[in-house]
Each structure stands twice: as structure tokens, then as C-alpha cells.
Length: 159
Image (cartoon, rainbow, N blue to C red):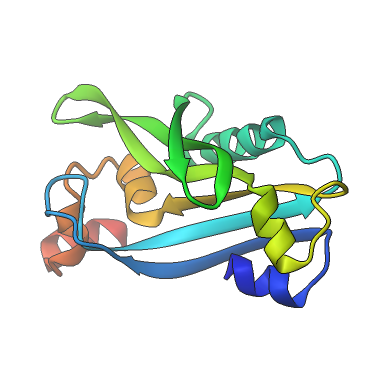
């Protein structure tokens, strides 16, 4: 979605989009081969990593509560530089555990160049967060697989 927006619109850009992701993960308490992702893109003059971190921290605290702990770890993603993984603290099996929520970073100037956007004038950030993992933290769900098993006893607690 982010590339299509940059191909068809000129900055300033602010986009949030949802979609489904498939990847060859082995299923466990925090991984599933299919999940939903919310991705965001902001492109404007003077956008910095501080803006990215502030937006994600505010989002986490708004959705999950003021006490939510968030950390950013350096990582590699091919279309952002610098890049980071966003982790949030959740209580998993009775102990606090950092769980990756997604990736983020500053849009690489080469991406802007390929989209015909002047990287000397504009900068931007992008992120993608896993919806199921956010739900796990918000509702205290200990195992992501519960979200896909269609067990009515589990699902009734959210109605």
C-alpha cells in the first residue's frame, strides 16, 4: 500500500492501512503463519526518527494504557534506514516478556528517488504492527493460536 500511495500521490502523505500477511513461521505462543498488520507511512518536510518513536509510543499508550513499556531495537529492513523492531512488554506465562510488535524505520532516500520524490526536501517514516499481538497484550491472551481456533468458549469472552 505504501508504495502505491507514493506512486500516485505527492507529499505530504499520511497513510494507515490494514492487511493480511502470510509467512512461513512455525506456530507457537507468539507466532502464526498468517496475521493481520497495520502499516503506516508519513512523508513530509522535516520528519525524523523522533516523530516515528513519538507516534508509536503514543499509539501504544493510548491503546494499551499509560503503563505500557515499549522499546526499539536496531534491525534491518530493506526499505528503511535506520530501521528498528518495536517490542512491547507483556505478561506471558506468568512472567514479563518482550514481544515484537513489528518493524519501523525512516524511509530510505533511494525509495523516494525511485518514486520521484525529492529526498533533499522530504523525509518520512514507515511502520508495520501485528494486530493479533496488540490484541494479545490488550486482552491478556497468552497464546496467539487461540485467535485462530474458533473455540466459542474462548471467543465469548470478547462479546
